[in-house]
Image 1 (cartoon, one colour):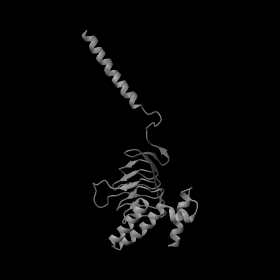
Image 2: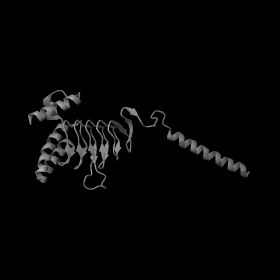
Image 3: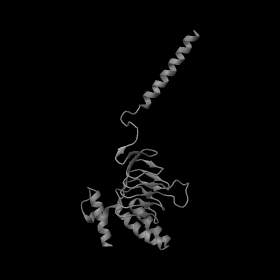
Length: 209
């Protein structure tokens, strides 16, 4: 148990430059509290003590703002930064050395049965507000951008952004064709369209005269 707590504290220290002391991390970090509670809930769940498991997980959710289903499988050195609004569904599977930020949902679409939630590989980072929905797989060594909505599998060693999320970098190489600097101005495009309509109407009037 003490070895596990030490690993948890070192995990936070390594990833959060704002962390000042072990006692601060142990007593005041909601992500760590939620993960520790989940370990107990997970053991209770697999002993078929479902009510107690739910009690532990819901109590942790009220205290931390992080809701993790007792049946979710979570690997080593899992780090939840900030944490408010994080939801992790029942059949979610998370590998080792995964980082997620506030507002992340690892949830279902409501259309699936059985395995309904995502499988996350090792060394994955999921940015704040991202939604990963359905029984899809996020490959290892992958980054999911803040605010992304992931509805399909994402391969290993990639970066995915957008709604719905698309892979923009794979194995260190840019793979999308979107010019994110010279994006067309939608207002200017609409004004141009209206001007074309006006010109057409003018021409029709001139032809009738």
